[in-house]
Length: 541
Ligand code: G
Ligand code: G
Ligand code: MN
Image (cartoon, rainbow, N blue to C red; front, side, top):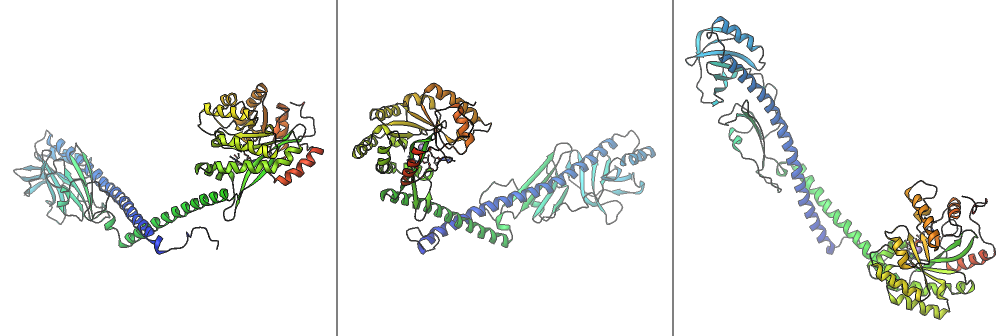
C-alpha cells in the first residue's frame, strides 16, 4: 500500500470518538424525523376516521332536525288518522330515522310505526338539551326489546334514530376516541373507540418537536346548522409508542446515517487535503512538465507557433487536469511560483525552435493574478536575455474570467506592450465584456473559444455568434486563432469567412512534447500539412 496518503479506511481509537458523536447526532436527528413522520401519519388517519364519522353525523342530524321541525308544524290534531298518515308519509324521506311519534305529558302516545299506543310509554329522564330539543342516547325504545336507539324530542314530536346507522366499525385504531357532540358540547351524542369520555375534554395538542410519552393528537370538525361537532382524540402517539422493532430500526439507521455521513465528509476533505498537499509538493519540487499544441496558418498549412500547456502526472492521483489544479493553485496562492516556473522552463525548452524559426511564436497562458504582477515581466525579460530570445516572439494569453477592474488591466497591457510582448485574448466570446476589453487591452490576437468552432454545422446560438465574430474581426484587423478544430468542415467554414485565420485543434495536433514539436517543425517547414478539403475553399462561400 502506498504511504503518504491518509489512512481513511482504518479505524483507530483517535478517530473513533468523532464517529460515535456523529452516530449519536444521527440517531437524535433520525428519531426526530421518524417521530414527525409518525405523528403526521397518525394525524392523517385520525382526521380521516373523524371526518367519516362527522359526515354521517351531519346527515343524521339533518334528518332528525328536518323531520321533527316539520312534524311539529303539522296542522292536524296529534295522533289523529291524518296526523299518523302524514307522519308515515314523511318517514319515507328520512333514511336514518326508524320511527317518529307524538308526546303528551311526557309520555309517547302514538308513533307512525305503531299507531296509537294501548298504553302510553313514559319517556326516560334526560337533561341533554341542544338546539331546542331534548336528546336521549341509546335508550331501550318503546318496543321494550334489546334494541336501543337515540331519540330527540322537539315540542311534541319525538324521533327515533335507526340503531343501524353506525353498524360498520368507524375505526380500526386503538387509543382513539371519536365523539359526536352538539355545538354547545354539553353532552355526547355518540362515542366510538376505546378512550374514556373524559378524553373529549383534551385541548389542542402543542406542536412539539421532541417525542414525549404523553403526546396526543386531536381532530375537530363542526357545522353550524344542524349544530354538531365531531372530535377525534388519539393518545399514545409518536416515536415512543412505536413497536420496539421500529424504534430499534430507527436507532440503527440513524446511527448509520450519522457515521457514514461523517466518514464521507472525512474522506472528501482528506482527498482535498491530499490534492492540495500534493499540488504544493509538485510545484515546490518542480514535478510538472510542459506540452505544446501547435498553431497552424490554415490556408498554407504552416505552423506559426505553439501554446505551452502545463501537465501534471501525480504518482497517486494520476494525470490531473489543469482545469482542476490551476484554479486550485490560484485559490491556494500558488499560482505565482507555478507561472514563474512555467515561464523559465518553456523559454529554456523553446530556445532552439525560437532561434531557428524567427516567425514562430510561443504562447504562454497567464492567470489573471499573473497578468497584474510586475515580476512576471521582469522574469520573462530576464530569461529572454539569458537565452537571447526576441520578446516579440512571446505571446501571453489572458482570459477575462475575472472581476479585476479594466483600468488595472489596461495598465498591465501597456507594460506588456512596452516590453514588446504580444497579448492574446483567450477564450474569446465566453466572457461578458469582450469588446471594451479588446480596445483597452489592445490585444494582438484573439483566440475564439472552442465552443464557437464546435458550433459550426449546427444551428445553435453559438453558430450565429460565430458569424457575428467573423464580421467583427474583419473590422478589427486583429489576428484570430480558432481553438478546438476537430474536423475539415470546420476548417473549410472558417477559411471561407476568414482566409487568414490561424487554427489550433486535435485535427492538426494534440499537445506534444518539446522534442516531438522540434521534429514536427522540421517536417512542416519542408512540407506543410493541408487540412482543408481539396476543393478550393478560399473562393467558396
Ligand atoms: O490543454 P489543457 O487541457 O491543458 O488546458 C486546460 C486549461 O488549463 C485551459 O484553460 C488552459 O488555458 C489552462 N492552462 C494550461 N496550461 C496553463 C498554464 O501554463 N498556465 C495557466 N495559467 N493556465 C494553463
Ligand atoms: O483555454 P485554453 O485555450 O488554454 O485551453 C486549451 C484547452 O483546449 C486544453 O484543454 C486542450 O486540451 C483543449 N483542446 C485543444 N484542442 C482541442 C480540440 O481540438 N478539441 C477539444 N475538445 N479540446 C481541445
Ligand atoms: Mn490558452
